[in-house]
Amino acid sequence: MSENENRAERAAALLTEVGETGRPIADFPAECKPRSAAEAYDVQDAVVRRRGPIVAWKVGAASPGGETSSAPIFTLIASPASVPAAGLRMFGVEAELAFRLTRDLPPRASPYSRDEVIAAIGSAHPVIELLESRFVDRDRVDAAGKLADNLTNFALVAGPAIAAWPALDFDPARPPVELRMDGAPMTETTGNAAGDPLALVTALANDGARRHGGLRAGALVTTGSLTAMAYARPGATVVADFGRLGEVRVVFAT
Image (cartoon, rainbow, N blue to C red; front, side):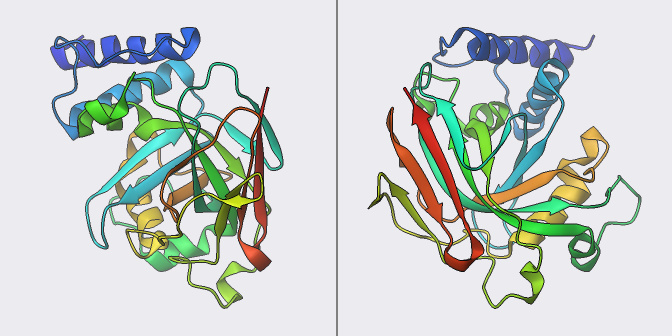
């Protein structure tokens, strides 16, 4: 095993232990702290070997045409969902739009076009991403550390399929959505910072997912927050209301 492989395995073991014990860490020790995005993805890969299979993906960018970042997701729950509050600390929630593939997009020499990726998508879905850091304070961890921590993903709650989404008159970068907790609005609607979410799915097919054999039929790809991150609490019911596109509901059960 190379030095980099050993570093990644040690970091992945720490993250996996946090998931099992519920005891967060302040940061990675210097001897296994990822020093770049490439090393952070090595840590993700090592976590996949421990936790797999991958049931969904998240991908995003800070601006249109900006560098994308991605992470595998291991827990996918159908809405309406009940998630135990015990053991959670952050209770982060974001309303997002995801896309489910109906055919494989395996790695290949020539990149997939946006149209090819759209042809492989069977449905769009309103979703709520549940966010939970494996660090005591995620704001004190650098970008590579957050990336290694699967971009703070805990789980994805998926709403109903929107099978006819290409024909519907809505902007997928800014669909109608309101995030509410116990009936009260939680946060502002911002739209997708990356702009076109389908460009993000295309980037994931051509780059981020290649390490794991590409995107597989049935996988759900969520494409970044449409709302500023908000924080729920034990016992709360959170709803992402997408109007005529459907809603997603999760209860943090006590």
